[in-house]
Image 1 (cartoon, rainbow, N blue to C red):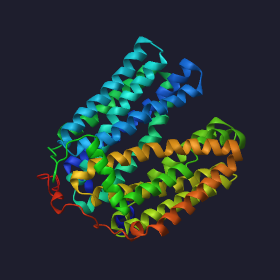
Image 2: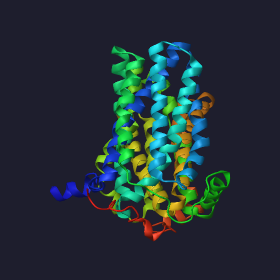
Image 3: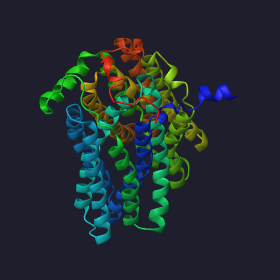
Image 4: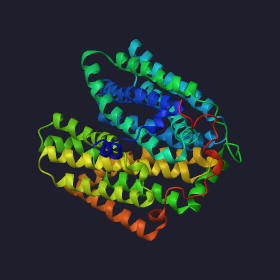
Length: 427
């Protein structure tokens, strides 16, 4: 039984390395506050405007700066000390949270103030997220990168469950200001972790950040089918098969209302958490490209099956299976990006990754809602899952480089594994 648990349970060896342990703990704590604020902003906006359209505009306010600054933030990350950049951008994110706290305490109730602060928060996130992703391969040994990414993805899944549940309690018994204050307090853990990182200077050729370096990063992706396909399958998974926009209607028409909606919205994250806790095998897989394709296929099939299920518990269970498969695909996508590209390109690769990860589900919401209006909820939900499977298998057959990819392939620099003094030693 002990041997079985060691093979199946999540691999925690990356936590032996002090820099990663602090970074992971800081992110694990702060993501709860981030999710809490996300719910509080949406509820406050609806209270001010009584309009779901304005609530939807919050996503637009976050997405636009994320796309613009995500690409640029990745380029900056490749040219400067990543520790300093992470610290500076973390303070910008923290400042936006204090702005939300201040407007709530002052009772401004201004929709444009909320949108502006959300956009500012998104700018900070556009720099912190690719930088944090580019840091991981520099502070853990290369063979532990998949396990490190699994720990990060699991923590994000936990935050996606705990944060909204905490928001429900805080907003029911407290206030918007209390919610933003909790977020600001929790974010100090991320700031502490960023400050405690060792200097992480660029390796290899340093390119001045700007449009030219962004274009160079995109050209690097185009020249390497493995990277291009890793983005393509993620876009297919999120745009074609994400059923999130259909949850309120399905909950109302089939399962009795808001209580069921809560379970539907939590189901994917629950599966992600369970999948993370049972992920000890992920780091031992060598054919990471084939595993990525298989995980996306399972995601699509699970989503399609959930759309046909007639009982709420079965829908939740199938969505949880999809969430576990999505965690596996996310880990392999992130690992391939971090270990395939050389260090001088990692920031830009992470910038593109963040744009795809953030933009895909939002486009998926648009696809699901539009197709439901045209063809009905069932066709939108089930057809999206089946379309995801068909498109991903077609892409894998047309460009087999991803399926053939094995851990360790790629033009990554050999001298970056131990580039941070002491970072690969347990501390």
